Image (cartoon, rainbow, N blue to C red; front, side, top):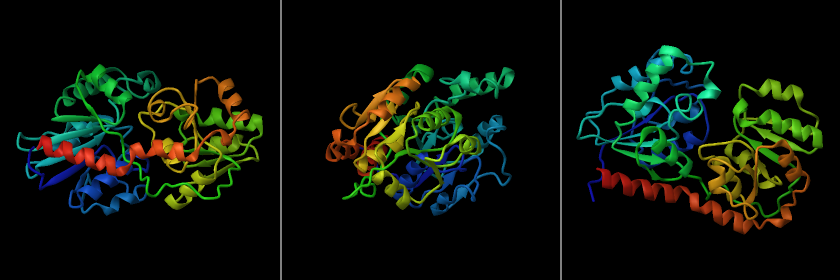
Length: 350
């Protein structure tokens, strides 16, 4: 066993939103409350959650990280971590590229190898091309060798790390607050629930079109680039509630029939939060959700055909699912287990 790290820093690609990865960061803050947060872009208006960190290190000039992706490697390579025993990066792009000296150990919690460079090039092909794409891909490959240890957030990500970086990793699933997300004693179960950012790759439009056609009630939690378009095509039984507090989110989980998670995700924290509340998940049988949801026991896993989702919704019967069995599955992804595994790993690496 190594020594317990005294000085720790946390690094994240960009601090501009709220989502599953941000819950990982808050758990790291609980573990290491004195650790500063290093990033490339910080927007205090859209990422108010980050104010809990004692210090946030970011360039004074705010810019669009999607349009200026080429600048992120320069920013992260410019930071000095000589005063730290341990740096933990949480990243799907450039944060893993920090430069540390031998006495400073670097553990990378990899959300996924950079999507627009490796696994999902086709989806991003109109944004990055030619010399810029080649430069970023070459840099990313080089930077992938800088961490001392990789943590994959799922088996899906572990396989990608091996495929694209030819590196081994250890799986530690992201933390879910199973003490907070708990079942209700008397749930209403009068709607289906969709939670997450409204982006094209999350299949939100197809889901809404299917619910319009079936005339089934759907509550949508979250915002995103597709929000106005989705609202414009939604029927009267679809309700948009925007961003909500954790308390309201828990209530929506507790009172739904099931959570819809019909897109590929690297891990997907929403399905596990739903299961912690004793609720089944209707999910895509691919990616992270296929690892967390046990079909016919804690939910239903289906293919990507609209007909499959339609049939599942029409024939769905929540009485076939035992909330106790569902919640037991979610407990495997508790925050306590995440903290325990990560502390053990950090102590070994140091």
